Amino acid sequence: MILQLQRFGYQKAIEFLTVCEAEILTHDWQKAAVKMTCSPSEILNYFHQLQECSPAPCASYEAANVQWILPEFEVRVEDHHCILESIEEPNLSLDQQPPPALRQALQEARFFLDALSQRNLTLSLIMNELLLIQENALIHHQPLRACQKKEIAEKLGLHPSTITRAVHDKYFLFEGKLLPIDMLFASFSANDLSQDELISQIRTVIAQESSDFPLSDLQIMMQLQEKQIQCSRQLIAKLRRKAGIPASYQRKRINS
Image (cartoon, rainbow, N blue to C red; front, side):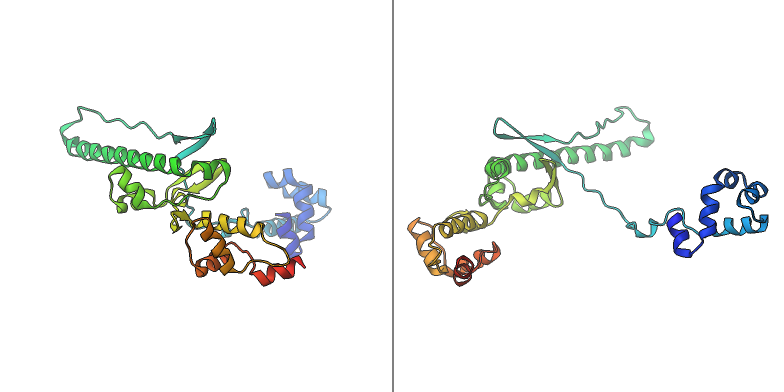
C-alpha cells in the first residue's frame, strides 16, 4: 500500500498510515489529528487517500483459469533400476444396497469406477514397458532409445490409438521434475537408432576429428557406415543442425 501511495504522491497519507495505525482501526480521527498535528478534516482526507489503494494490487495479473498438472506416477531409482509407483488416489466405494431411487445412479457409478480402474491399469502397463526400454536414458542420462507407440501396442496387445489416448497429457515425477509420459517415445532414425542415439554417434565421430581438418557431413556419414550405421548425408546435416553442432568450416574457424 505504501508503494501505491508513493506512486500517487500522497506523502502525508503514508505518515498517517504508519503513525496512526490504531486510530485507523478504530476510526478515531480526533486522536489521529492530535498525533498528526492537523485538523480532523485533513485526517479524513488522508483516510480517503488510503481507500484509493488496492488491497490486492497484483490480482489483475492472475490467470483467469489456473490449470494444475497432476502426475500419474512417480519414478524412483533403486539399485540402478527404475521403480514405478502410482500416485495415491482416493479410495472410492459404493453402497451395495442403495435406496431404489438411486439404483440407476449406482450402476452408472460402478461403470465409471470400472472404466477408471481399466484406464489406470492400461496406463501402468504402458509405463512399465516404457521404463524397461528407457531406463538407461533416465538413470544415466543417455540418449533415448528408439521406441514408437506401435511397438508398445504390439507388446500389450492394444491398438496404437489406445496408446496415444492413454498417454495424452499424462505426466510422471522423476528426480523432482514433472515430465510428460509422451517424451519417453522416440522415433526411429537409422538402423533402429533414435534421433538422440544417432546425434550421440555424430558427436562421437566429431570428437575424434582433427581440429585442423574437421569432417564434412559426407565424411561423417562414411565413418558411420563403417560402424554399420546406414544414413544419408542430408540426415546427418539435419541432426547436426538440430543438435547445434556447427558445420565443418565453422568448427575449423573456432579451433584456429
